[in-house]
Amino acid sequence: MTEDKRIGDCQSCGKCDEQNNSLQGFDDAVRAAAAIQRNSYEQNLTRERKATLERDNAVGLQRETFSRNAVVRPSTPGHEGAIVNTHDGLTLYTLIIYSENYAGILNQITAVFTRRQVNIESLNVCASSTPGVHKYTITCYCKKEMAEMLVKQIEKKIDVLQANCFVDDEIFILETSLLKLATPNVLTNPDVSRVVRRYDARFVEVNPTYTIVEKTGITDDVLQLFRVLDDMGCVLQFVRTGRIAVTKSCIERLDQYLTQREEDQNELKK
Image 1: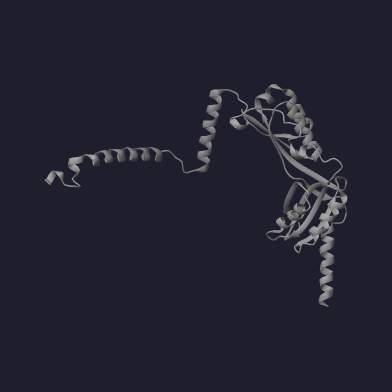
Image 2: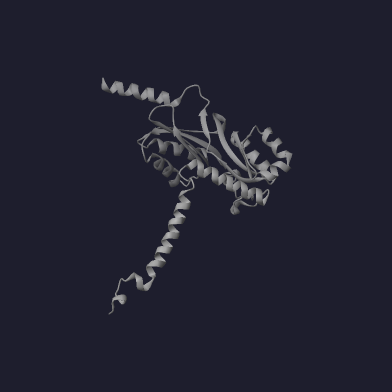
């Protein structure tokens, strides 16, 4: 084998020159990308919004930028879950449950409903005003006997402090909802703004594509606003929280229970 044919002789094959040229192009691309400031979340968000606005302005007014929700269509009756009341002969009960703040309690509570084939309509969990105690607000359609049985079974859980069931007349209820409306429909139909004001809702976001409306109130008012706007054909999305509730009683049952439990413990210590 001659000297110019030896393996590893870069002066004979020319492959190293091609590789160096490709690496040089890659380095240039890296330097060009590094020259753009991309080290800030706020800067990235600003660039994304600017690019989106430029695309929207180039295309013109549109109903929705996402293809999945591009068409504004009225909802189909019978496919809105709890929006349509299909629970004939059953009453909506609200269960207010207090428990210790330990992991796994929510699973134990929901298992009680699962074993008795009772569907949970809404569920809200939050810390209560008592330190170390969490509050669960659960709604379900069932008969009175079933609601009382659920309460008794839940109270048997070790970490559950108290459980009670109420009908709507016995508690004060609030829900919050968000409605995403098509901005072109809102601008061309003045009745949309009148309906929003009539139901004491408020606009929280407006852009060329969509408008966000917030409504807080009782369940019937929240659903009625959705139905009216949905009939106008301008609703893109609708979501509502689970209800939060407080009792109308002058006595806080949890405080009464904790006071009685503390007195019982003091008696046992004596």
